[in-house]
Length: 91
Image (cartoon, helix red, strand yellow):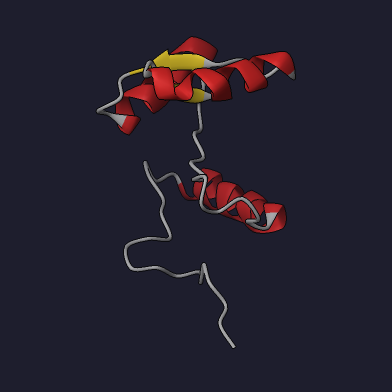
């Protein structure tokens, strides 16, 4: 789990560590740098970014996106430019 070196993340890091989640702390000013550091550490070939404000994202949808990405040969994939999958459902 990437997070910052800020003291405000100390409690989160403790809880994560207590339940066996590996934590890598990095730059507070660059989310991209933190993702890069984690990818390098674990020699990741594919990175999926799911933000904290999307905790209930459908894992089947995520798997479909990963498969589409891997089958396409493209370098980057997003549903945010423009959004193609609704994040909020309102009645």
